[in-house]
Image (cartoon, rainbow, N blue to C red; front, side, top):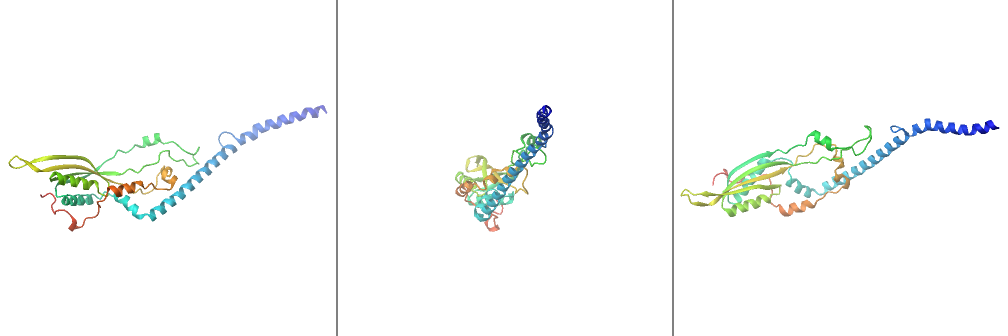
Length: 262
């Protein structure tokens, strides 16, 4: 009887020891135990739910684009998808004629923007989700589409009032434009007197945004996919401030055959 009483506690100790040595490591070992696998499964479920939500929001965005074509036109006119530098020249020539000034020079060049190096991107990016290579990882920094810029050096000859009219028309072009520099000089007559006509040299900027061929890493974290709604407040601002169309100019609408002649 004494032996049986002694064996009972011993068996309990042995069982507890076996549990600690065998069962507990299988439950959690810090790497691939049952607990860790369960946590990874939870991570995957949360990721899938997030992706499903974003997929639904994408469908809402597509439906919005299809049902509001006129608003899309306003945006695409404002930020063109191509340089269309020949169209810019034709329209500036036409605006100069309508403003009763003579074109002295038009030149178009592309403004090169500084690109972030791969090393800087790598240092700034940290994983958001996933503890090993089997769990998808999204970059903490979503890529941002940056517009390219065209610089236009535009010089005209005319009186001050007409130069003001031309500058106002340029700022009302439906395509994004900005006067980043303006210089007005007086001109001398043959008798060395001051002419009423002035030489105005403008530096203009036009933006265009190339359509991305596909989504890149980090795009899924863009807030637009979380909300599923476009912020269209800018569209009304464009409509209210930009009312001069930038279209393909037909031969009959162009300025003078030689815009550089007075």
